[in-house]
Length: 472
Image (cartoon, rainbow, N blue to C red; front, side, top):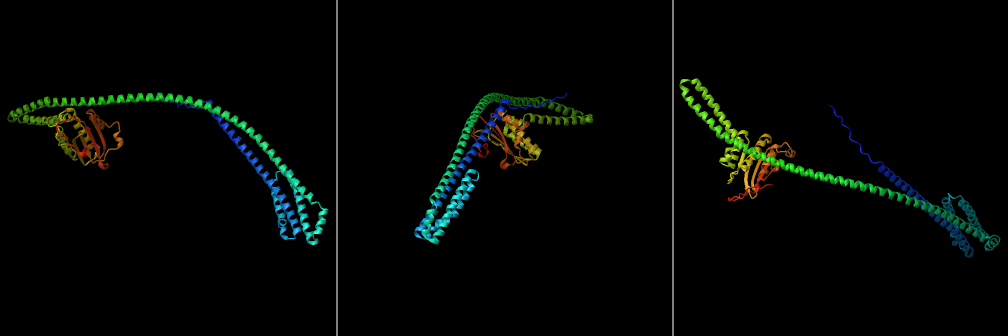
């Protein structure tokens, strides 16, 4: 049977939200163009204003230059000193310079260029008259100048220049007023347009605000529901985890009780039966040794097999429940197991458990012994260590067990693997007694250190403290 996997649906933004977005974008673009147009109009008006002011200044300066030239000439006639001719000598160059500047400024105004041409003719005619007057004075004297003055009308020439200057200044002012009025009208239109755009933008923003508020409320409700679901899930997970932990500890306790019961039965009943069989085989073997040696040899082989069975039974019993644990106590059982570990693995195992402890509580002793047993089993399988130390101390916090090796260590991710049943089993045994178990790198990052702290009830014997063995 084949299953068709449908693609996930594509979530699209609602049409009205998209339309609002484009409307808002168009409004902003239109407002930008309007602002740019207003800035260009303002720039043109400022340029026209500056140009008008500069034209007026140059025209007034032209009038001043002509008047200075005329005044300097009169001073020369009265004093006959050449120093008075300074303004007259430089006036022509200055006047031509100013006229050229006015041509550049008024290049876009044909009417003003026409007026400037007339002004240029009047000024040049006036300057030519002044130059001729100087030449006449130098040749004939003041009387000739008086005769020329009677014939010519210099007053009218200056009035014509002034009138032309006034006309040009007035026309420039009118042009400026016209440009300002046009700019003011454009500005009014832009203000109205901007107010309209702002009103529409505010309306769009209000609609966006409503949409955002509705979306926020919906999102807040969804987040609240999700938070409640997460809280319920976390509570359920914590409850299930606690139940599983309790079940695991219960199974450990039941398993140890069942192992102890089975060990007692194997030791007592099966041991008695095997001992009885061995005695019977010995008696029959002695009786048949003389008459039927072949049968006696078979019985001796059977007895040897029986002794191997007895040894197998002993090992099974020791694995199920170490007899030293019940007969001589926890310390003796740990030392014996470490010696056996050294014999089997050829790994040096040092023990420091010779402390005065009278611990006969079976749950505690078997839990500590199993932690030592599991730790040494892991070292034998994975650590590739050359030396192991097992230390058991009692401090002010309780019973402290430390198993330290110099092997390759254990990776951090391996501690969190769900299939690390050995580590989980050791932790559950420690939790069963109300204690804690930690696994960390050894000193200098070499090897692995397994440390279990089991709280103990107050006992009459004094505490044996060791600063080096306090939990890290």
